[in-house]
Length: 490
Image (cartoon, rainbow, N blue to C red; front, side, top):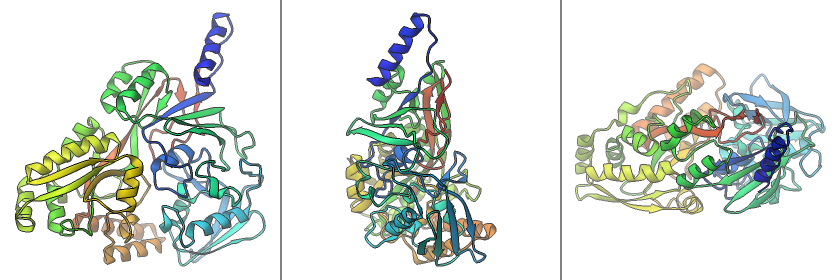
């Protein structure tokens, strides 16, 4: 309502001969609603899409090009052996409740994230920390169990943001961070409202207010954009309509890349998917391009392993799992001569629902039947991600550089081959760029040759925005709608 009232007042002023005031609020459309607003206590990408860089900040942060930049730490030093990081914090930083952000808050946040029983969704980010010490108010010393070439990268994740002990337990419903926007209100099932934090330590953002509206239905998303009820939809769920927006001067279409490896995940610990022949048969039954064309209207890049094609260390392994239905049938004749019926659990995004129907038809062609269940996001997190109660599912893993999840024995697709775990451990202790690249190539090849999952495509970032808006990210180096550089140009 405020959004439309402000525009109405401005238009009336124009009719009266006054200059049209530049708009200072924005409404962002999102497909999925975050289950909570605490990025340190949830795996859903939608949490970071609202709060990353807007409400919460870490020691470091990702820039729009994927680079690691200073954030709450303005600088740092690394010991000669690569195992001790000394972070120098910015002066004058306060949380939104007015309390000072000091080294003690950093100690609290990192100790909390790595504590036994932590609810953090990415415990591997903190697993090599052996000690965190405050040296005065603005210096923190983090000691690792060995050198870690990815530590500054890891600290830029949303899961590693700095929180205060006074508000940590209620951040899920009332997030209190250090960012340029503070939480105003939430209407579950509808929206989250943020307002500019005038006590921000850094440069003030141009926007005074931001609303994130949750619209899962592609038709409703299209209607909301056309009506002006939403100003921008950075991850637009109806790519079939992008040509229509591109032809309309009121809008700009923003197409980029994401970190989202879209996979047909398989439950490797459960029969019959514990048989590599069955997993291989499934991958050879899949025509990636048909899925990209049918579910994403041509937007997406085929992948053959769990690695982003825009990463310089990516290896094109699509040939290992090339579409080959005859090979698929031969493998099934060996491994499952009596046929197979598998459960396919689909979360809400259109890539999953549309892609699931296409994959079900492709599997049927080689003799595999599927029982499709459409799950809401909370159900999917509980049943599939946490409960591991599934055979197949489709999901985009939007976390940056996350091949390390294959080393986690408790992870939902349940792989954790000891040789892969050893490679991942070695990678964590390796700082030489060339050696790290070689290890990542070997890791990509191992999971591709083990046919852990069906690797489908890298999710494209297809967005639509009012043509007068600038500063939205074209690419998604992390799962975020960073509004810090967004402004209206007229």
